[in-house]
Image 1 (cartoon, rainbow, N blue to C red):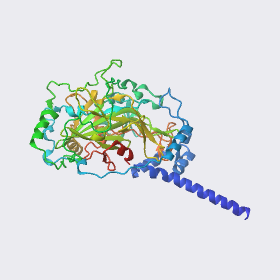
Image 2: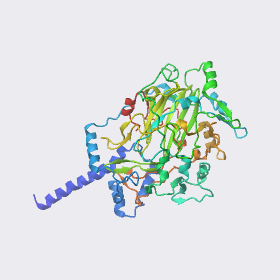
Image 3: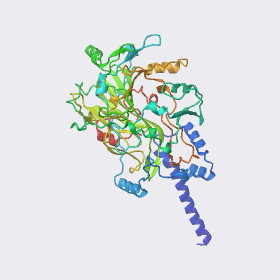
Image 4: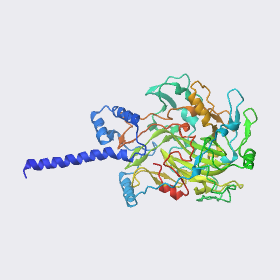
Length: 545
């Protein structure tokens, strides 16, 4: 064989290998991405790549998926924590994962109760109101607070629950990268005014988040410790502590809204009982009776509070789906989402972080809970959840877990792999500080049918689809209707803080608020690929993508 032929053969092999490598690097992020981009996102991505001033960087990004590699460095959670995990430790972890390949769970069948009601005769009902009559405020039903979740935050967390009012004080509105001139600072009472601008407005941090300002960490809101009362969490239903239940075959609550009521006919006596104990109404002009809510009144960071109390209010949004179905959405806000690492490289940071769980009640009885997890989540029958016994004969309450950094919600402590195989990408939860959001929250009622009317009528100035609960009648509602993200826009490739490897960004766009979380959903789940499972173990085997 001549030297020329030998060289040509080697060049062909190298070319085929390089072409294969480029193809794999191009294909891999597309195959693993659980939410593929649409045409608009692909155009936005093209413009993002063009923000790099380096021709080499742009070509490496387009063809190899290696964007901004000159920016890559260890991204510490805080300025006092600069010793990150070594790449060797990450590789050891990956090797262990290879020995136990992550199995993607299959979904169980969908039953008729997973979806919610709403016949035309049930539209709005006694909750109807108009701007021409005094506003009637509803109290938070006792059963919602009695069955409110208890949230284990991670023991090594760096970014704790935040007050949305405090967060917004550190934000400025930006439109297409330019600061919007406003006559007053951004607050919860004027955010919706930004919707009138032509384009998406981003609530953008005044500070460089990598300088780790104190408000980003929100350490003052770490929950106060629970007293050791001997209560232990337990898996499954605690029937001795929960209220009497209907037979489990009454599964009409699973797929319901006001236009699709449960098939089961409600006896008249249940309707009268509902008005006696489950829902109390009182006028905004009447004296307000405190229920369980303490309100965000405490400004002294050293003043002790009840066990599990955090100075950062959770957001409780109640949605009446008709025919006795009420969905209680508990939203947990954090000023910063610290992404997870793969081989010591961090992905998925963003300013602002909305997570939530939803409890579906049928005539005051809890039936199931949904837990948000990244772009999706999982749902569990009520009896499947871990419970914590309460004092004074109150019902046992569900215990859920918030992952370190990402704050994704899970039903158990431990390691939770997602998206990538071999446990390369994972959330971690543990039994850290226990947060009781029922002690301090912003509580509201939301009527999605009123909102549909408001969306159709562009002349509506005072949006009334969200109303404060009677426990906090003076709360602002404008923030809820703000359509932009609650954090910075995605940083350009030219930004020293930004990189992207194989389709995953170091910094991504901030999240949309609760109004974008499908509060009008008929099913317990937020996405179609999610089903309600009957055990925590089944939840570990299922995936939201």
